[in-house]
Image (tube, rainbow, N blue to C red):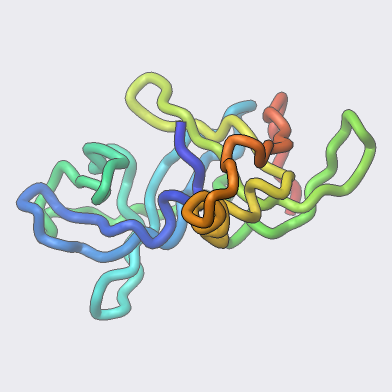
Length: 163
């Protein structure tokens, strides 16, 4: 499993190892209970935005590896039911139907499933905010026990996109 905050700004390289750009967003299909990753939004070094279809992604490692060379990348065209996780969900308020409260989305959790990744959780806790701000790592370096910082999350069952 991986958190969205750990992926954003990660380098994206093509099949030859040439840097394509940095990840800026993850596009998911919001028409299923656990939204499937459909594409990655990448900002190239010359400031162009490229949406790379998931079928062209080899691995979400460090760096994110593509299956194709840069000149053979095809642009992904988003459909109406798809959601950009950074632009549309992160830092937004969601309804926690169990507690009947509004909650702020601090981070999102993705998990591998059948050759793709799916959105499986929303971190509404303090840990998600610390992770995004890189404070959790900094606190660990200062001697604070990072294991004591617990996360409060919500599992998506089901996920409903409202615009």
